[in-house]
Amino acid sequence: MSTPSLFRRALADAIGTFALVFVGCGAVVVDGLHDGVVGHFGISAAFGLVVGAMIFATGHLSGAHFNPAVTVAFAVIGAFPWRDVPAYIGAQTVAAIAAALAVAGLAGTSAQLGATLPGVPWPQAFAIEVLLTFFLMFVIAAVATDARAHGSQAGIAIGGTVAMCALMGGPLTGASMNPARSLGPALVAGVAEGQWLYVVAPVIGAALGALAYRFVAETTPS
Image 1 (cartoon, rainbow, N blue to C red):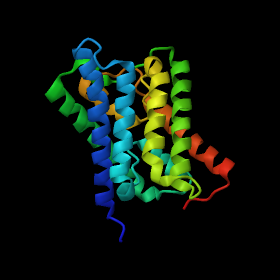
Image 2 (image 1 turned 90 degrees about the horizontal axis):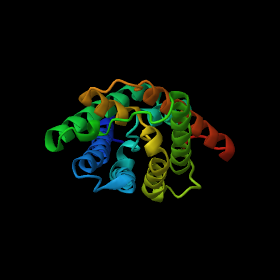
Image 3 (image 1 turned 45 degrees about the horizontal axis):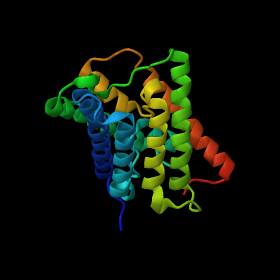
């Protein structure tokens, strides 16, 4: 079977990113509207479940990045062409903004649309986001670039990691691990505070996670 065109691959990744922000941030908004009915565990599960589901749906089409930091990290280790990076990041960013607009239009703007904000001083928040994204990308690199890993279970492994990191880091930083996931709600809700952190820290953490896995596994990109 031929590889889909860059447009189709970017579109598939945009659909996955839209679902991530719509469901994940939508859960935050619903929780705010209905007095904590979803809860921290539920919000973490929503993010993990939607990521897992969309990986199964689009992983064979686009690689299921849904995250500019993941796209950059794959490019850093040679598992994704740099020439395709702008198309993927553009698609992810537009999709995240569109999803935030959809949540605002359909459910309102409670809880600032799930915008991520540091709940601890920024040096700690920065370190937390780097570490959480490191763990996430370490898992992604394992299931996506190493034939010895169980790639068919990527959705479970990566979705579970997203939920795990959200459970720990959500109250501290929002556990973004994803510049697009943070940028979309922040732009629509008009939240500017600390947003640079959610661009820089995930990119650093993802690059380090991908490089670390490649080093310990002694693999080259497949």
